[in-house]
Amino acid sequence: QVQLVESGGGLVQAGGSLRLSCAASGRTFSSYTMGWFRQAPGKDREFVASIRSRTFAYYADFVKGRFTISRDSTKNTVDLQMNSLKPEDTAVYYCAVAQGLGIGVPDYWGQGTQVTVSS
Image (cartoon, rainbow, N blue to C red; front, side, top):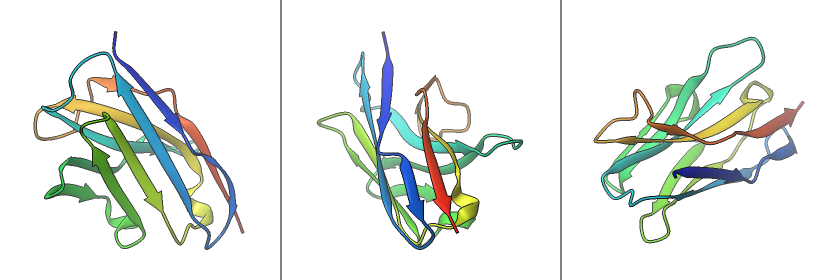
């Protein structure tokens, strides 16, 4: 049974930082792309970042230069370091994994972790 468990969300002031972590279990994820999505109230879920390996990391334009995704394949974890946070980054952040090179349609989702950025 695949499980994705996120941690690290919380409340932070604008300009601050948070680090989200996701621990995956239930199978070997070496052939999977891992990533993060988010969903703000009243909005659709949107892609944030994904990583296949150190040389294959992708970011949504609105987080480039502020967020960094990293992955530890030995531990099946994926982290999202979020710096220079803005109120518009407020959302529930979801960890996701997809088999193959992309994460367009994830195979598995975490339960989500709330990130709130105050102005």
